[in-house]
Length: 159
Ligand code: PNS
Image (cartoon, rainbow, N blue to C red; front, side, top):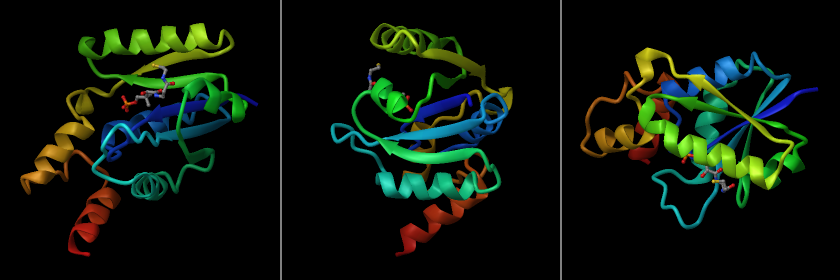
């Protein structure tokens, strides 16, 4: 059984992420979406909220699981018997960081491979950072996030 991990901050999950999850789930038997729980970063959404949003938008994908992780990605992979890292590439500007990440993970664990899925051109400029900024200034984020996420964000704003 081929187990892949799609790691990230997902703060919050965007349509671009969901596209990579949907396509990644077709490549492996099981895809674990690893949600970084890193105390040194200050996310807009708690890890529990990010997981809840991811669970809602992936409910229709039977071989996708959502799990938090802290520490090294390679350790999380080993714990879950996963050998493939999946990441999305939006533009050349992503490449340098992604190459460094993949090479670092390879040198930490030689059994881990990284593959990149080229982001659908529709979402090539979409990022969680942009979504957070638009949302902060009360702009319309409906074209960047799945409807379930929009609903969730509206709901937690009210509460
Ligand atoms: O969505 P992001 O913030 O671009 O995801 C970055 C992520 C989570 C993939 C990366 O920061 C990561 O893997 N962090 C875990 C710590 C780690 O393993 N570091 C060594 C590899 S650079």
